[in-house]
Length: 271
Image (spheres, rainbow, N blue to C red):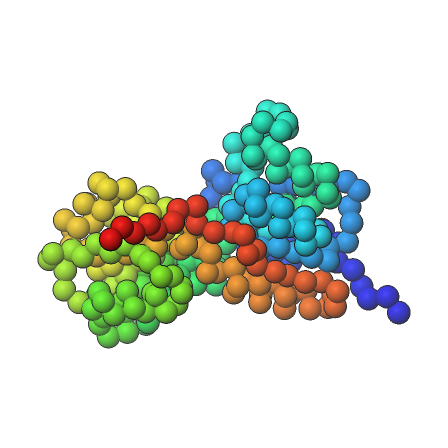
């Protein structure tokens, strides 16, 4: 007896059950971005934060049928598909090799149990809610503002985030006038626009500009910067488990996290 096979539309439906595309920000480009023809069953799914050429070759080597790329590889409209730019080459490879591409981006940020809830779980909290609540369902929305169980020092917060994210490096701004941490706000990726004006003892995000850091420092808010994609990548193994459970009826379907997906920046030291 042949085992059942998952269609592309079925898998996309399951992705929407976890995080409806309507939860994404209006400026975003989410959903099914590349739909090859003819359609083929989905047996191998690859998860990545960024669909780079290295990840593309990895996907081809692993006979991938669907790439779930957190950041949309098509954001600004493409006017042509040639070999001149890396993004055009990626789309060419996808179409030639029959690989579909789906991007969830801010729908994963805003949904309950998504990227921001994963990041907020790095610190012990007694309560958590979206900073910018969704008007239809206030349990979803951008960022998270949380109350700490008890009180944390900045060093304790750094250690807890290190254990949770497994990151070896992060940047820390210690506000001179700050005391213990009783509240914290998180926003994965580039979170300054969401965190702006939020009253909290600590901000945790991927990146902020120099002047945004100065503003936080002068309002007495500590800041921990993890790096844009590093503040998001740790969610992929969590989502792998979610998706595998949602598709457990298909015995020949595998979900993998990319080994080639990484921060484009690296730390260099001089003695």
